Length: 93
Image (tube, rainbow, N blue to C red):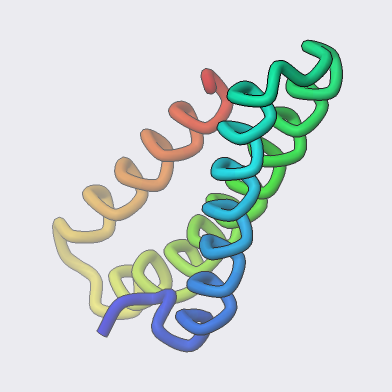
């Protein structure tokens, strides 16, 4: 079971909202809306995606990493490295 299973409905709902935001941004561009307004909406969609990413990261740490630590073995380092890599990608984006 994935760590985000318990939050799956919330994540899906948030992603649907982001999908709607992105469609709206496309409509704004098609309608030649003011560039600052388009940028504002892009920023809002970006923040919404970052929020989903942080929720998934939290679930990974609290489920996958904790489970690996409790089980011991080489998987612990692997799960921690995965988390570190994910955090690095989020910080760079």
